[in-house]
Image (cartoon, rainbow, N blue to C red):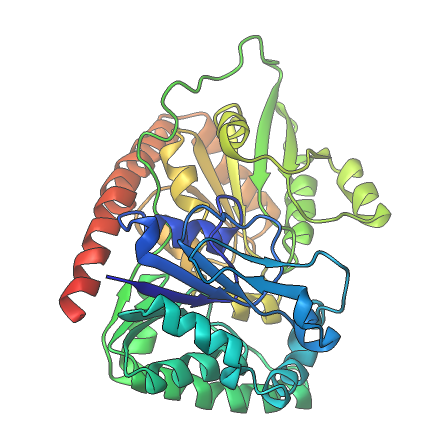
Length: 419
């Protein structure tokens, strides 16, 4: 069996979508996987699939065939590291122009790409549906040209919960809406990252959507112990992840709230790959928030274990709230298994916080409630047996719902039955 994965991001042990992909395809052999992807990513795991093919904005703009070399013997795909334009940085407003670029360059008819696909001879297509029309068009073209069955997987919602700020975004939405319908109509299997997303999509598109999110090794923290001689006069809250979608502002608000508590000193450590400007640094510093940089692998697990409280937050401004409404953070399973208390701060209708609240897995702080009420809730839980109950619930839920071995084995059976 050979699966061709089409996605914007490659397999990775570090980046969110890359980690999710690796957990899903854990039960597949390297030679059973090939991947077509569309971004430069320094964190690519070149050992996970048997062959890779990369096309980026930079490749299209530089018009240099030497920028990309593909090993048709099934080893790797390599691109130049020269700096070039990357239209992803312009995000929502220029998304439509990025689609025009890919359409103008006729990427879906790229001869080199189709030679590689023919050499891979896939049996099935697995597509991560993103917010660019071009990747949908390329996937549908491959499915139709090679008469292949396929699956689509949505990790974020760009159709029902996304607000459109201006004409460009509205125009892009219209085209993306049509692309979603075309992709879903052509595919045999549909997946979403949350139960809420699957419910919404199943209802609207009239096709069954199965929930599948980032899964983890349930023995992830074996042998990892808290550092000894930690300060007893402070509580350490740790955040792991990007600061995009206004999450930095939510962390600052939380820091200000903690300063009003008047009991133990509470500090927030932020482990993030996001570049932070001087204004953000000052705002963080003023509110007992400390930037720790990026951690990964064993170092990540050590820092997760070594904290007192793990922070998950989502912005409550209307635009960013709409972007995350149906999504579940990929780091939540790792949090749940840690046997540390999770603090979720944000609007409670968002899928990730809803999952934690409905299953009684975390201390939930509604960002729309008053600081006074939220402070009282924090104090009450930290001074009672409720904290231990939440930690126990979280661990048991993670073992039951996010075991990567069980999920990947079941996923493989679903694909095999469809082929």
